[in-house]
Length: 210
Image (cartoon, rainbow, N blue to C red):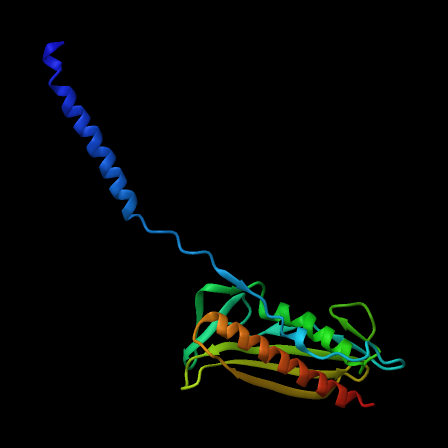
């Protein structure tokens, strides 16, 4: 028993060294990235409303809004040089921009009073007119001296009886950003959305007539 007593301090030192080593290694492990921030595209809330329907008017079917490649995800897009799309690392939309825009379009057109009813497609309801929408761009642009957000939407109004295109228009709106971060782009994107919705309502009202 006496022969093994000198080894006990060495064992204590070894255990202590292992504990210190384990603690040091834990400090070297990479830290988990912060959780992403999620943002809504709800600019339609600022669009002024009018009568909810037009008695004796036409029924409008709004087709599901499509998105161009690169803009069909919930990632927030920015551009530093032409033709190259990038994404903010820690900021995302709560849903794809197309899915967030679609109900706002229906609500804005219904509130305009230009139609007897506005129905979101796909639907089994019969409509006099069909509105097809395509989101071509929604991006924070850092390519010029003034940074901005660009929203581009193509609208096609079709007569469902004749299948003829009544009108096709491209809405392209830019809003300057006050800062270069994702949140500044979100604010500008919502402002651009409100402007596009107002222009879309004006187009539909003029096409249908009084």
